[in-house]
Length: 113
Image (tube, rainbow, N blue to C red; front, side):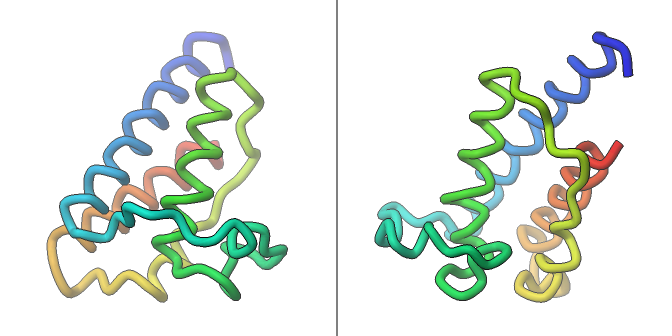
């Protein structure tokens, strides 16, 4: 991937991350208070033993991706969040849930190029 493509990819990821946050806020799925720090230190994928999926997105995935993008760190080589998200975000319920799943799918695609 050349430098221009990489720049475009990073810009698209920034937009997706912002839209995920906006969608969660609109759906009233954005917590104002963080969970206790020990819950964020789980060693399990998605912190499934200590956080809800949306808490993981808010408190771990979004901040880490913003850090990677802002510091021009190397992007992950792949992402497969959508199958897990589909278990916990009922996409057939409302437009915000469908939008969130669509954004996560797009995130996976952009990371897994």
